[in-house]
Image 1 (cartoon, rainbow over the protein chains, first blue to last red):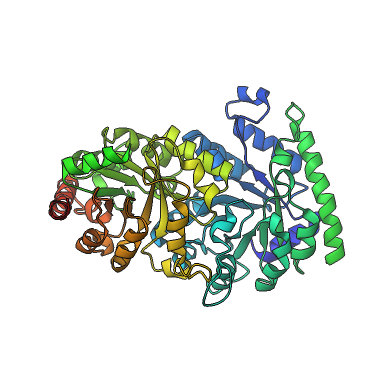
Image 2 (image 1 turned 180 degrees about the horizontal axis):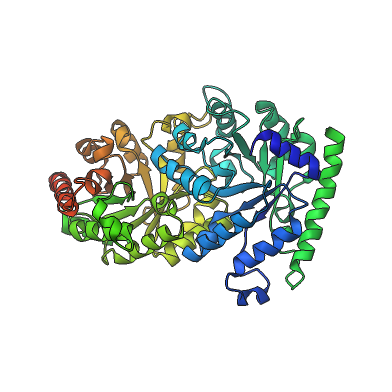
Amino acid sequence: MTRAQLFAQIKAKSSYLCIGLDTDITKIPKHLLAEADPVFEFNKQIIDATHSFCVAYKPNIAFYEALGPRGWESLQKTIEYIPEGLFTIADAKRGDIGNTSSLYAKAFFEQLNFDSVTVAPYMGEDSVKPFLYKDKWVILLAHTSNPGSSDFQLIESVVTGRKLYEEVIVKSQQWATADQLMYVVGATQAEKFEGIRALAPEHFFLVPGIGAQGGDLRMVSEAGMNNQCGLLVNAARSILYASPGNDFAKHAAEEARKLRDEMDKYLVQRL
Amino acid sequence: MTRAQLFAQIKAKSSYLCIGLDTDITKIPKHLLAEADPVFEFNKQIIDATHSFCVAYKPNIAFYEALGPRGWESLQKTIEYIPEGLFTIADAKRGDIGNTSSLYAKAFFEQLNFDSVTVAPYMGEDSVKPFLYKDKWVILLAHTSNPGSSDFQLIESVVTGRKLYEEVIVKSQQWATADQLMYVVGATQAEKFEGIRALAPEHFFLVPGIGAQGGDLRMVSEAGMNNQCGLLVNAARSILYASPGNDFAKHAAEEARKLRDEMDKYLVQRL
């Protein structure tokens, strides 16, 4: 998917919501456990109920890997089920040497046909370049919102005066343009969004940490939006597990619609 | 496996060789493609031929994931086939927030029963802690040997004067002891080994980049060995693909034996 196609979808749906398919077999409604593939059945109903309110789905690969070969099959069926035109993100945080990263790229882009993969920057350029396929995307970890994000990401360079996450944003722009590269920027660092946006004015940011993780959609939207929106804001648990009962999909749709309605306001203000 | 058990195995075998099971279906001998599971069949014959010359096996997870659910099954069979007492490393370079890392830990330690997983440090403490299981190991990326390793790992902190990879080594020792934590230290940085060894005198280092990748076993061994050896030196392609023919396992054994014989000399010098 191209950046223009992604922006067109955002305008058409008045939404920049990404739904995280962090599907946990211990948390899905019990009646689904009788299905042949409970994880896929859950995802299918979530997708049916929410796809008109969101522009992207982001399966968290760990949740599928933890189930072994069976989980990998649920993932494959899920990605095939997502309607044409929605942006898909393999949240895998891969980062390895070149020939290994090429294999991960093959797994996620060719086998599973994802539009994008999240990638960790620690090993540098040759762990990013193999993911640069035509019309596919690298989403590089920049500033995450977990407690440990300050352990290394805030280290300030004696040479440039920039913090590690800023170095990642600046240096990686030598490797790919805003048509192939996005950044993960955590929602709890909303006060830093303006600075990060200044470093990467055109890039899309994938923002986790909204909803159950306690982020602030308004702050992120006001500080981070650019003239092509430039944001994909992720929510997972608050949508997936909005209700523990048979009506889970209906409640998921309501949560997604609420977020869409709020996003619509910010889009109207900015665009 | 405990550190004492690992050291006992190193002494018993006069070897600190780790064999990387980077099994590439496009590189294995053609006659194996007629087997029901060519990747497992290749690994089985490699393991049969080499397990007396090495102390560890390290499947590179990307090679299995690139094959989809089928690859995951080959991995499962391979790990079950590795003889009791050998140390096993899931080279996965995972690094995510706490609850996601917990799922990866479950996948590699509980589902697949690996002894250790390689982990990327970018997201900090909460991406490492979930892997701290009893008698299991985190092998944290410190200084890698790929070309891109200098992009971020050499950034020098304005506060401590230490480089990023040194910060990783120093800070992570607050999270786990040398009984649960090892570091990945690339072989092409052998000249830095003494400095790294000084920062982590007791820890094991996993050293990739020997053999086909052009490292130097002597330099690494002389600069990096401690009084419990403290090294696992990995070779993959030079062993796996020593011969393209039906006799591949015999040639793999010869390559492994050569490395073992050289390691024996360094062990005798040091211990």
